[in-house]
Length: 181
Image (cartoon, rainbow, N blue to C red; front, side, top):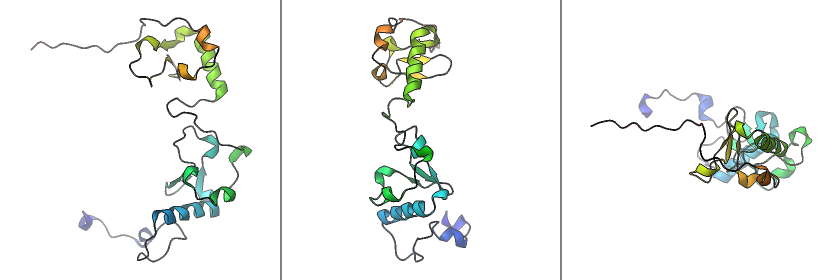
């Protein structure tokens, strides 16, 4: 495969980060390389997407380089980074983070509105409580929007206002067709 590839151009032989050593004979350790990315973020914040204030998933990176796609997480940042970082967007003090990876992340007021909609309009929701095959499956799913709700994340008032679980619904089922031999 190597013989079939075109030769490298000069700019492809050099690393993208400006502080990177010019000599290939002096390899850097992974922590050193990672430190260089953090230094680049501090020195050139405009070259990085800052996702801290609008993360919808705890596993999503906090920063992403706009050109290279390199990603950085605050959980693995060097100790000196926190004080050097640019301020959060919208002057937020803390980023919006996922409380649980197993449940979709919705803002608290939106969750509350979805639960109210379920209680007021149960016919607009699939009730999966009686036929759940997997504990990670949602207990309720909106028929049109696909929004999902889990009882283990419900407000305290929900349980007393829910209708009893439905045994059968008008949901399409998978059909098994037996072929004669």
